[in-house]
Amino acid sequence: MLTNVFLVALGGATGSVLRYLASLALVRWMGAQSPWPTAAINVLGCFVAGLVLGRLAGSPPDHALRSLLIVGVLGGFTTFSAFAGETVLLVQRGEVLGAMLGVGVSVVLCLGGAAAGHWLAA
Picture 1 (cartoon, rainbow, N blue to C red):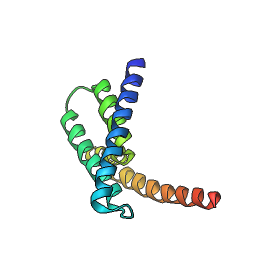
Picture 2: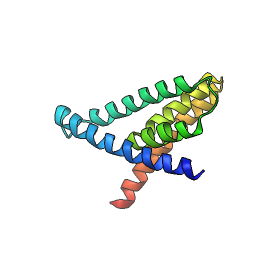
Picture 3: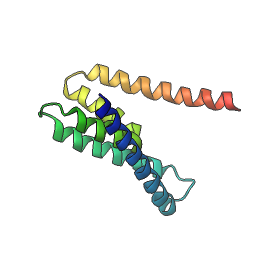
């Protein structure tokens, strides 16, 4: 377990730095007021999560690799990628209703949480 914790920490630091660098580059290209840099990072993270999870599918579970890449690197890069990857896995397992409920609840509650936090801070 301690090894996986270390891998998550290492991957998270790497993903966070990658997100920072990607954000700098995208803001220079698209502008600081644009929502597109964040959207681009989320899409890229989801794409990479799909690639990694797709390559790992059908293989014996490699918890160390998953901890490093999915939880760590992509979690540091964008938590949206974990959300999207897990939703895709649910759909692939035939748990479409659970996947759609998860999407709906996550979007509504996350937006509500952000609004509530913003309201409380004001």
